[in-house]
Length: 112
Image 1: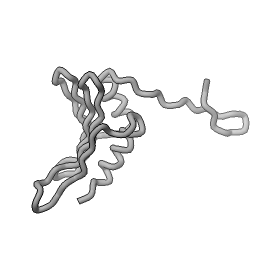
Image 2 (image 1 turned 45 degrees about the vertical axis):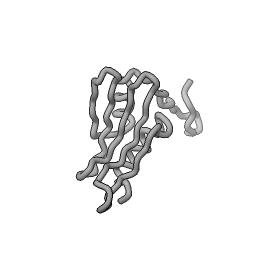
Image 3 (image 1 turned 180 degrees about the vertical axis):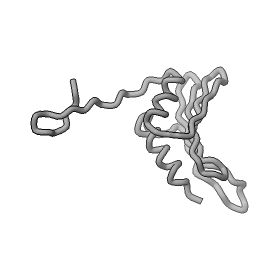
Image 4 (image 1 turned 135 degrees about the vertical axis):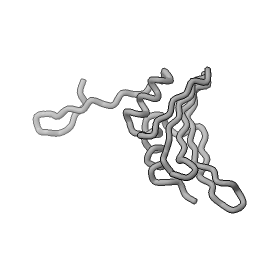
């Protein structure tokens, strides 16, 4: 079975901010192998991680942040703000979104 569109969309959001995942496993659904949800994980050297899964039955993507001490938080509404919130909770630096303005001709320009 292929990954759900919601999982692929959520993975694209996280990848846009953090780059490619360190570990990834596609969804498995066959008579030989038990059902396993898709998973993508981003980690840092200090042991903190963000894990995105698509859920075994409901295919609702879940973003799970875990600190090295075992503290964890979970988000189900995944977008730019959610990922930035998870990264802030883990004390990870994330690039700020560019501030865009418009010049006199109406063309977008990056603000100083």
